[in-house]
Image 1 (cartoon, rainbow, N blue to C red):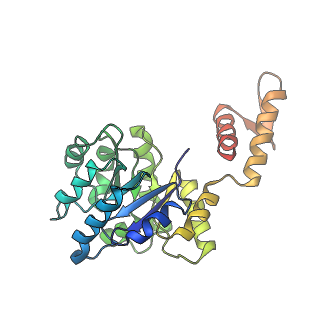
Image 2: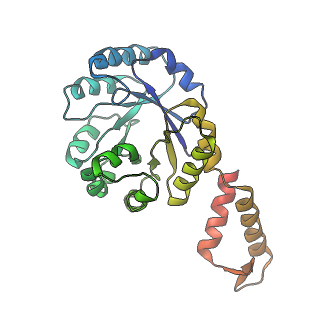
Length: 266
């Protein structure tokens, strides 16, 4: 299954961990970074450690950046069997990321967060680090770091680059940033549809109520499915040579797109 939703849970709220797993999210991220105040970092790490010792469900952990005093102890959580891997914030040092990757088990991975200008310029190297599953785009932090005032069309070129370097590196389509409007279903749908149009394969969530909207937004629309069915039917019934659907020629890339839409719909 292609994972579409990645749900953050504050690391110092262990009573929410199991609820997050029951939310329907494809992946859960126990967050030791932004969601936890500095004075609560050790308490959050210990809460995560204790919960990991008894759970049977694999989860991700977002650790603190490598240049912080919490990083080394956060990395000790790699020993827990149910840790799928780390989400690495403010990733911008490919060599440092490779050193972390060398510590992983064969069943563990990294998801670097591209959320700084330096990280964006290093994204191609970061995407090629061994054990990187996919990139994630931290749009809100990037907006702050870059001085770009807005994370909509103002970020079009940034999003495009993150998608293209992922494709070039042969890793999974990246994860787009969060939608901060928790109770605005229309805005969430618009954000997710934009992510899909730009080539992202998933989205970060900050509340369980966003999960269903993310799944729906990444699903092909009824119109897309109907078009794909017409394309496949025309290819099956048409003579050798050019085939047209809705007045437009169907070539190999269009045929592959139609097949991909139907596969996703299934």
